[in-house]
Length: 410
View 1 (cartoon, rainbow, N blue to C red):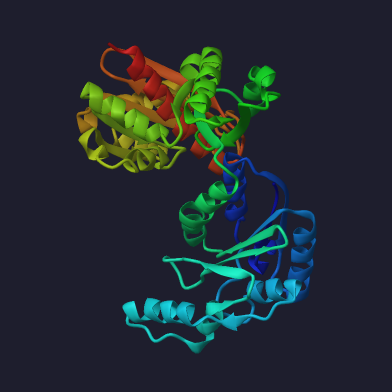
View 2 (view 1 turned 180 degrees about the vertical axis):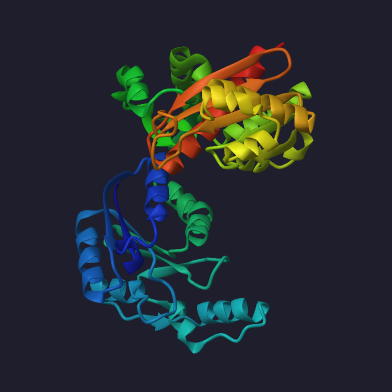
């Protein structure tokens, strides 16, 4: 099955929002064994939308659209589909009642403009959308399939997971498609791709490499008639990958690095405190994203200036002697955080985010220190010279090195 995604909305073309819907669907389609050939973005212009849909309908087996299902005048997806297929949209009484009830439950009077969201064409079935007022359309005609979904990501993803994906899976037969994602840190995307290059040409299971905020991910996907066969293929490929990366693999599937670290701290009964400079509190934010993190995280300090570092316990002589961006100051920050908050482990991060070099150190350089009363480690980081990247990479680097330290400790 050849698939095509058409993302609808002028705000996409203006760069006001990122097309996360297309990325999400593109990630999901291979799990169903569906090949994605084209992705198109088009604004809220009826003629251009119709032209894009006609092209997609002609060359693809499956067309997926997102956006343009709202109640306003520029929400034209239904009208474009109807015109493209030469069918007349009509208000479906049951859909209209469902939308009126949606407003009634919220004690809001429904604007009459929303009635357009209750329309269907003869070839279309409504796809339920409990998170909003815009039902989707499931259109089948002449062996072709078009699925229209709403633009808000929370509505689209729920519709995909609960309505669209199960139905597509059933339509495509009983072949089992399973995947497993292994998550690595410490290697560049190019290095990871090179390390697994002998495995990338395999067709079943397939292997794909993705750069993510928390490292480089490797997704294994296997197809088989029975679940046990697919699981066996994935397990064999996973064993090969783990032998290549060893401790660089920190988790898999839905695991997050901050949750993996939290579980280790809880298991060992240890507490943590942080002092951050260039990351501006991002490390503490990631740690506290995990439910129950108060059981092991004592707190964090954002010491962005030299004065702040000194006020939190860093010896000013160290800053004078070595500079604020140095291994010595990072270590002193970790020691001060640990002492001030009475934690078992302290972490200090100092670095250069931008806009210019500091003390002769280039943008993107950083030092991460980890102290626990028995040992001290200072890790040097070098990241792309962009402020968001420096902050993000340094924070995740600290989480990864913390995990490594905990695994090495007895």
